[in-house]
Image (cartoon, rainbow, N blue to C red; front, side, top):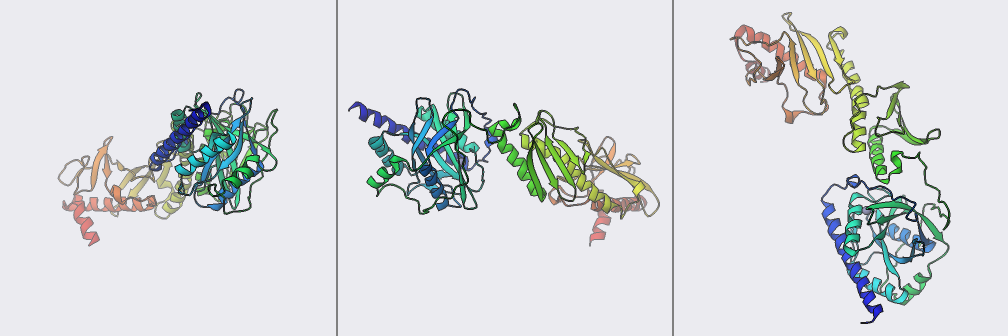
Length: 484
Ligand SMILES: [Zn+2]
């Protein structure tokens, strides 16, 4: 075997291994929740790895045409080229999807046979290397690698002993496509977003190769590319950053951009008008919401060490209760729920409750803390007054606990304590010496059950309890009588 042949053989084997690993990882990922943030991989220190990729305009257009062929499914292929003396990758030929590739809304797997045939010929005819892979994202419209992508890349690189590998992610935005290049480094286990250095015209390989292997190559059905404006940076010198945040800002970390997307999705799902913009004075991110109420949310320089600064109708919301555990998006959502969403709900509940209770007889307390509760005085028809407490810690997520706090520790007709769970009397095990009422089974609970409704149920319980004290008949007896 000649040296060249041996070399080619090794190359081909490498590609095979890469594809097999990719396929395995993608399949494994399918069943799992695609969570890019499981892989907290930071940007490569841009001082040692060049942050640009060279490509012919014609090859970018080829990617665009392939994406436009499948507006709703992921498609993809492979990248062939070489590295310059300064270790900058040059994409000379983009391979499209083979006939037997697998496409779905969430993944793409290249046709192995198609890949091998083309790879061998590209090596033979033009001495190109397999330097990367590309695919489109549709459903997600995320222009960066998903958690599954990151795993696949590193697993494939490890299996093939590749220190560097490119991943180009394409997106389709209303008939306009984008392409973003990411360079993965095995040693540092990091990846970074790269700038395009776009060379005018078509790749010299494209015409020659496609003409020679007409029956084998993939020609997209879409003839004309539709690309979003892509900025080309010069081959040498400082490249401009897309958006420049302050040094050390959380959004300089690529993996946090997906966290921001989750936060944005959450807010946009809740409110109609949500916008994000960069504040010029300190290069931090600010979100504004204009709905029934106006909100502004600033993500300060030290975020997520400190909570976001939230204003509601120009009033500053206290910054207590920032829980720094879990994913950034989850931290934000929990905080926002506690500070804003729950209060919006309490306001509505308050208005409803005014219909059945006088303002002086009920209160929402500690609602700015982790243990908010509601308390009310209820009077039965025979003039007895009870004070109830509703624990709102998990409201409206699950059935809130309701306690009779005054008078404390109620007794049955026969003088037994109601502090123990009692099916006939509709009580659960009490807490801190207070009787706990059972009024709704966990499986029947719905988030839209109002406090108004709960208060009415407790009122009914108190009326039945008063009757029970006279007759000795269990609450269950009255409950059944009432419902039949
Ligand atoms: Zn992907």
